[in-house]
Picture 1 (tube, helix red, strand yellow):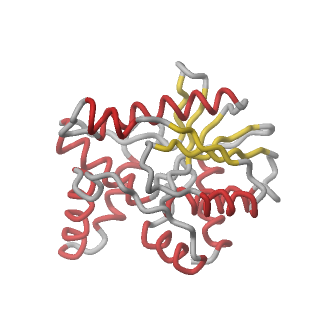
Picture 2 (cartoon, one colour; picture 1 turned 90 degrees about the vertical axis):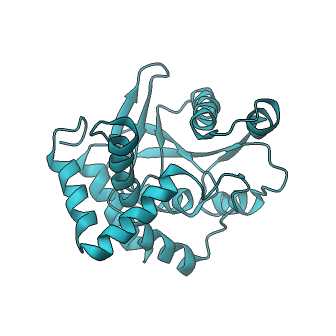
Length: 237
């Protein structure tokens, strides 16, 4: 997948859901994974010619793993002319040593979001961008149905009234496989996730289930995504 195609998908989502306004300062969440680095590339490229002028800030919330090295990410941000901040935390110690959480994902997400939002506000950002892609959208719908008993999915744009920050998701039209291809073609400096539960989550189970069902019923992924866009789920009209 070429950068131009990646930016095209991102711009379509941004235009469809009016994600970016003139003068926005957007904090890009950088986990070090392929998705967030692809998002950084897409927004950095769009910044050069998008009609509504905007600024970017890249932010990584470090969970405190010593083996997680973000130096290559820092170099990439420098090349793309995007200011980069690493927020150091003790989240991993809190989850796995102090609390010994058996199901840490929910609390982990809450702690990371809090640290991210605080830094974003501190440096003057009014919006933040997450790298949720096409497959994340579908998986979230099924996870809500299976584990919460409701038909729900996160919105392309969400205003967070507690922090006065608007969350945008510009990659919702981009397939995960396209991001993998982009990562390989551009040798993105992906940081391995040292979390001990990585790959053993309900989301990973749902991802594999969808792959199996899509092989048995080709086009299932597209039909699920269409159901989200054309249903009455808040924020998707």
